[in-house]
Image (cartoon, rainbow, N blue to C red):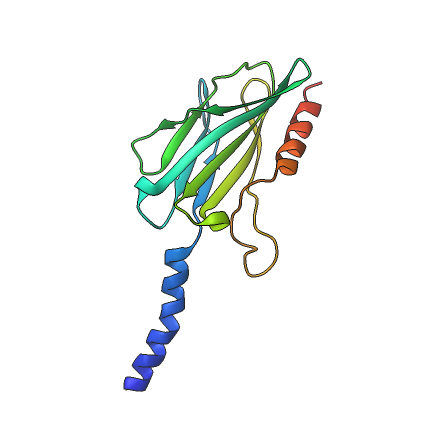
Length: 160
């Protein structure tokens, strides 16, 4: 019996470590939005929410120049949930980069979503960058500058 108990404990320990040391998660929903609401963002992590930071930035072009600036998210009553409201010129498509970051975990402490938004404020697509290669292929990561540039080029091409 003690040997069985030891085997069970040794089998469970790796699962507990992975569950407590995994990356944050991000989810963007945009169905059934109204008015100036563009999307809802849910950012969570396994530890204390006070350490979890959810941020947003906008990327677009105006008069041939790249524009990038932070957006303010409105916190909802539900834990880790925010609303993205359109606070930009609705005549121009944009890319939103939404970030959940937690603590000092380097690349494993970040999850991002790259959101293409058409002129008028309708979400066209949401991409969640994932780590490449084993064993991290399922883990979220920060979007690269090239991925954000490509998303912006794609959404701007649909607006011509």
